[in-house]
Length: 347
Image (cartoon, rainbow, N blue to C red; front, side, top):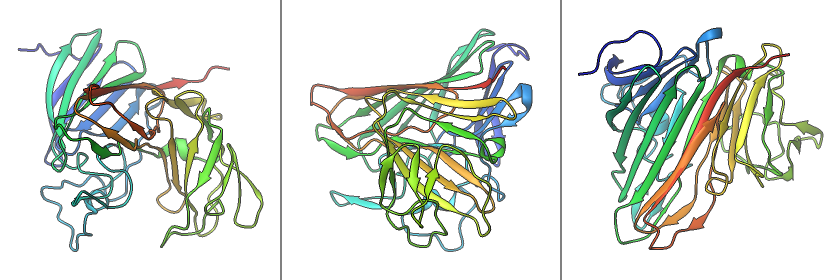
């Protein structure tokens, strides 16, 4: 039995939020809330010293897929039916619905909507860690990840392993979908990434006015506006009359990281990852009401043969994606790790 503690690092896995099992990890600097019954979605990334939650939260709040049934569900679009902001794992598809070998993959896949298994692997005042896992309902993919916090550090570390449990290669996209809100989307906020190219998405049916001319390729951080004007994409602009939307992609990453900082408030959030495994960033934003920035929609188009894959996460805020690659049959898994951290900027 784990002893109770209200200081240092601590965690709980028996919180109920909107009828869903929720895990909470925290230390002196951060509180991270994870919906275990809904894709292990991170709905809170709170920086305690400034009482700032970097995650976007939609006005309608968090929806429970078990009880909040949409009046008219969009075919293969459950992700949108239950989307409320936050940070989701995207697998086995990133983007609109596709059909692969006769199987329909809904928008952004399926693991973001189903319950994940959870167990506590470490619970001490100096470090806490949770091990999470899930199997994709429509593919032979098994995803495991560990989330951990250490005492005195405003850093969330995520280590992941993705395994193809079948003898057949699987085509997939794997990544993370992070939506930021609050102070990190205020005018003047800076976005930094070691990217070379910026590609604006083609015409988006039903979208509002855009900052970039569709389909262009330019040198990051600048692009061309609809009228040919130069547009700086590394600064959040004031909200124009009528709002504005954008979807673009960053490539040619020299390193796997990006940072979003608020110069006036002197606070920032960044994300760090393995750019060899996830070499692209997806940059989306909506400046209507509510205003959001999807600064972390990352997906990895890959073919994975039987076996696992690993990746590492670390940084202050994150928005990573991946690249197209083919794994050899002998490579049983892929691993990845991310580091997500928050920091007050000193003069």
